[in-house]
Image (cartoon, rainbow, N blue to C red):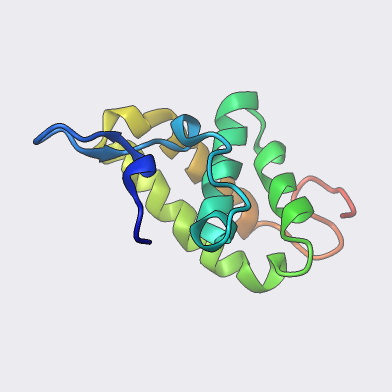
Length: 122
């Protein structure tokens, strides 16, 4: 990614950090490159959980937006979410989004084709 400034919450010396999923919101979502990547979709799904306080909101984002690729990307998404969950331990601004990422990783680990973690057929 060549232009990353829009991903930074703070650019001051010794204060530089990435925006949280909540701070990033829907920016860049769907754009070519990073905006269409599984990582960007994971960030938005985390934001949805932090916003609604419902794990189903994030899981459903994946099922609806990554219809054709969700099952093949599922393990990679879980790894990205685990990484994001660790951000909540290291960076105080990421605490809520990190906890949301951890919940979503668990939901994806328990997701099953045809049944879903919440007993839904999607």
